[in-house]
Image (cartoon, rainbow, N blue to C red; front, side, top):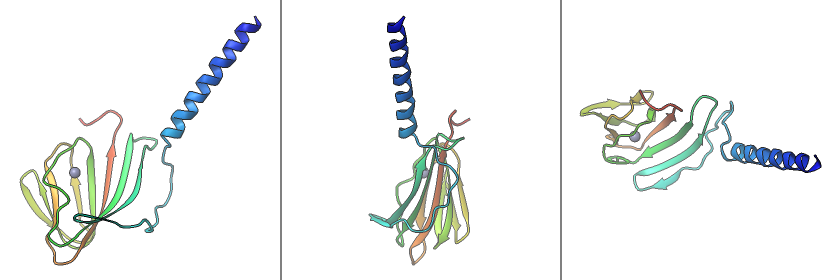
Length: 143
Ligand SMILES: [Zn+2]
């Protein structure tokens, strides 16, 4: 009888430890404010400010960063991915390429990029272009 109790205790502690480890690894993002204080890290095409990358109560992952493209620069050739994203232009002029169509977007403009559609952006202005990138992954994947 006493051995069973010890075994149950060991199993309980192991289960609790496993749950605690899982929670520590995947900290769910709760409501918050992200101030404009993350450092701009220079890269080959301008710079990036990392804001958040974490699961939320309804998303497998929420990722937000702020990119700056120097004049004439593009962060990558046209690409595609399952997750969707929104780009909100803060300053400058972007040209977006979306499945063969090019459009210009200035400050306050919003680019929605649907799942698995070929896309990229290029700074077509004479000064740096800065834009917020908000990406999310849903638990069940795209439709
Ligand atoms: Zn993309």
